[in-house]
Length: 473
Image 1 (spheres, rainbow, N blue to C red):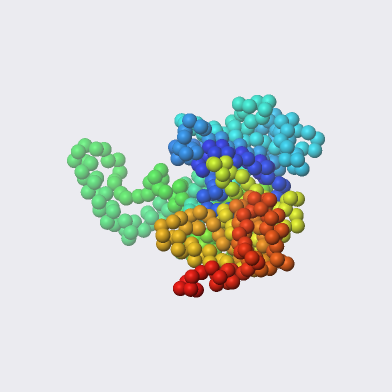
Image 2 (cartoon, one colour; image 1 turned 30 degrees about the vertical axis):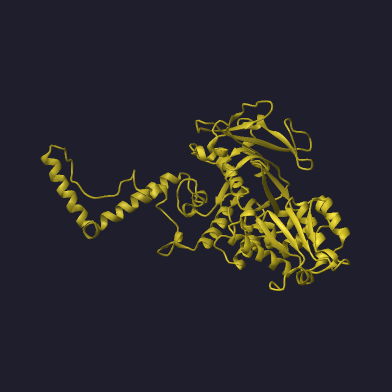
């Protein structure tokens, strides 16, 4: 199954987000820190959580305002046939036009059959999952077992549980068992039997305590049917909630490095379902060297049955992806915009080339396009000076000075960043009018890009020698 549309209201840092997704299988969310990239992944996870009692708290509401309910609505396509059956959600099917991104309540001839899933959490903190239509706005319950069939899996910083045989984990999904709980109970019974065989060796001290407890019980009139002894409790032993784990020989795989665990989980998630799956990958680069990032991205690109939502702060990840897979998140007044890095309006701006050469700048919020390394150095010096004077540093303001490597590249870079809705400023010399002219500066200013050039057609070095007092020279 694939997500076609995503709408989020009043969830954590997001007041409002609406996103119509193209028919692609990989979506990488980038942008400045705190632009709610992880929140988007969490919203998808919550909407398809297989837990009937998924827990929420007041901090999950936007600005902790529980008077405004959490509202997450997702349109999913490429549906499993069993979900389309009349006795399931067939009467609630809608239509999605992939070309116009239009959702029709009654499917039209060329539409893809889709379901609209709505998760509502009010101030009572009780989540309600519904399949809704305009024909039936109150909807019908979207059952936990059916949510699990969507196959949504999150690979985050804390995914060790996925390497255990607990309910809902990736290993549990690929275990060939009609009844996983029964299989786990049988494993516990086998462990009890093995322990009985070594009782004299490993339980001697525990049984001595049990014998003392038996004497106490008899003295107090507590009935003793056979004899007290130490043993495993089928109802409380943690094997059913993750005690049975994946090992390499005698070493639990949870002791692998973080990056290795996450790569392994990505592969296991792919094996979980015969059909399609939706994998959410938070901080895809976390714990991985550049060469292993490249291998992981290739694995994701080669997987034809999955839809992936990645989040990254890594220039290496950006360089491994194509521009069609990148989406920039901008948060303005609590409303979040998702801006595609590719599209007709961006044709001719060489965004792909800019990402390959300037990936770091795409992870910021404000970009100062500098003509060369000298301008970047001066700005870094200003940042150090301002920080020492207790003024706000560039890192707090989300500002990145960026080296254009020549005046001839300034206009294209500034135009590209501006088209992706970054705040952009240009810092250039005035001595290369044939490469970046006053007219180029005027064109950028019309688009809302501030331009600072040295007067009198001078370079920064010339301007400094003319303007600085001799002591500073």
